[in-house]
Length: 69
Image (cartoon, rainbow, N blue to C red; front, side, top):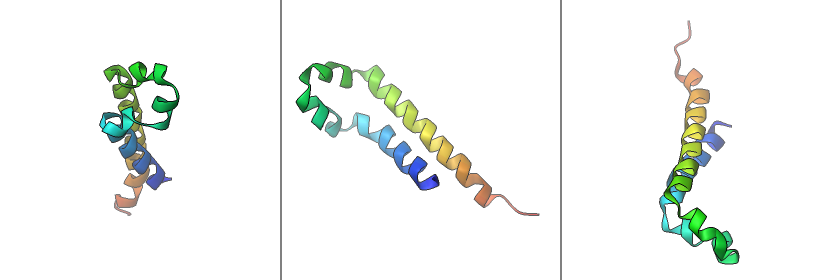
């Protein structure tokens, strides 16, 4: 589960700001959705969800590095 959260978080943080975001299947199939996809607020919201995923991954990984008594 940790790997999923970390990978999904990194993808959701980086992907909305890449050129692939504007050239994906949904943008080609439904051109009317492109203005919404390229909106900086939508990109920021998706990146925010990615940040939450990344934090969830790190919070699940933290007990591994805690010292045991």
